[in-house]
Image 1: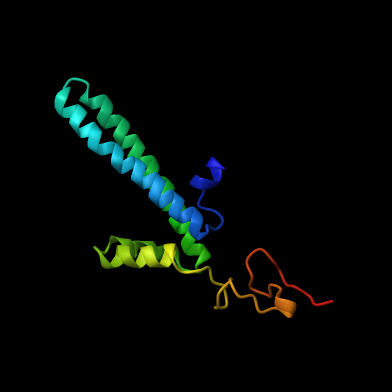
Image 2: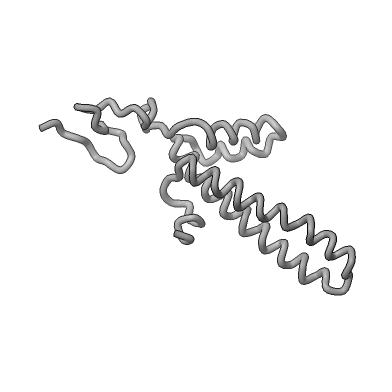
Length: 135
């Protein structure tokens, strides 16, 4: 499970993206506030706290980067679309909507939520299947 979270291979659903984004990033950034106060009080041991925070934030960033790239793959978007997140406000809002609210898509277009193969079964282009034949 942990290995999958840090992997850039595969796809991620909305639930996984939200869990990693809210929990992973939230925990990392909430740890910074008490650490700043500890550094202010205890100047001598501050480098240990700073090093720990840098490692924690780097792990959270790596985890979020991996799950966001997998989520973009699930949405059939180029990984380069992640660069739009560098645009203040608009880019981050776009990533939030794209990764957090929109359903997965098929390679040829359309939503994975509504399969249109024979009998409602997945058809060609459905991730994880080659083709479905009707019996």
